[in-house]
Image (cartoon, rainbow, N blue to C red; front, side, top):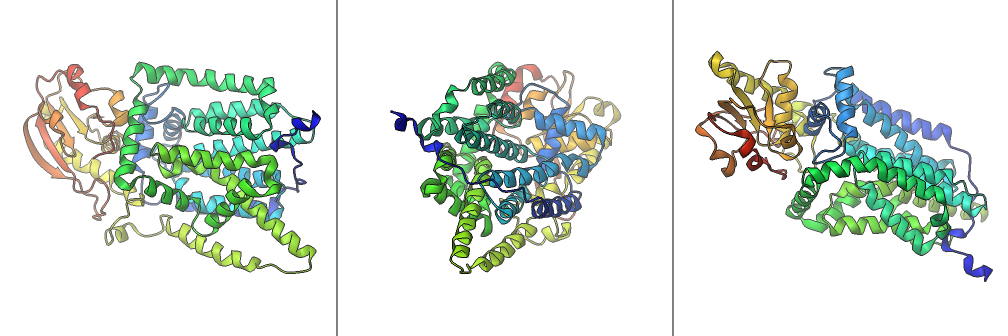
Length: 515
């Protein structure tokens, strides 16, 4: 009967090597330094402006994300007003920490100095563009990577016969914090628990601290769930909108190609692809095979529901680790046979990946964007032109008679434009900005007594019926003429005297990403 207790996750782990402090530190220091060097280029990304405004409207939840990033953005703006570098500092520091944690995952699996350095390098090359500005993606990836490390360390101690169950409690705390950034880690947790139930070690389910950690995560999540319930589950509407958006871009094929691209062109793709194969097939990876099937399960789930490619990025560090460990084993076998491998092939792949990553950084001049068509997945152009938009709105506003200005508001058809005017307008005495777009709708409607609206963007038919005397008074430009998502949008002036905003505001609500 004793043999029946042996589970797939109960095999021996390879010996854990010393942490590769020098090479990993070198990778992280160079990467973080480069990110800070370019952090002040161009301007605020549209979502960053929105996060600052959302953070000044604190809530237990929002329509399109959880509260941590908005509150963090508002705090950085309060501490360092107008500093783009300060706003992005938490994301960049999380970038460096994520690379270190990824290297620790490699160490946990027995990775040597080169394997750890390769894993950290794959992390910084693949994720540089996602950590360039403050967003939910980077912190979400960090949470997934930390959870992977803690679970692997628990499996290691369990296999050694000395389980450190405090790691399971810490895992619950990591999940609790990560859920306050982005809810997607719940998918990762559910898939991991399912694969552990099938592949083992099933002893994890008999550990009380696992359930204590789960209880902590559940309790911390309750306020956000209550907020969603009392506001009509807007995140579900946003999720449906995102799925529709992915379908319009090419559906599951586009998502899958995007996932492969995010894995890291050339270097990360080879390392991650090889790592997935080893996690699923190699005998050596049997103790942590659940990671490979979990990665595959997460990928399938988000492909089926039409998720965005970056939703699965949190599983990539485990794949890079397994790939780096596989190449390490090949080197060790060849060394034992007094033969030399083809390690030199890694350097051209690494060089190509560095070039691709550098090209994604804000190195080019602002003017150069006016001379090319912007790729739909290149969002650097969307960091250009927000102060100019606020200035254009300011000119229109100041041309109004003084008494009319007292009862004028700005209404953006998209939350980016409303956020830009609200953020930059605070320093220029512009009127308050409102929008029915996504989470901005929940920040409130124009006050009673509003007589004039400066509307940015196309006016939806359901909105236009509440406007009188609509006339176009301007067009969104950004100085250099960069072809970004808002350039060319119309600016209208409209009479809204007598509109009952509290009654009609639900008609302005729009959960799509359309401009």
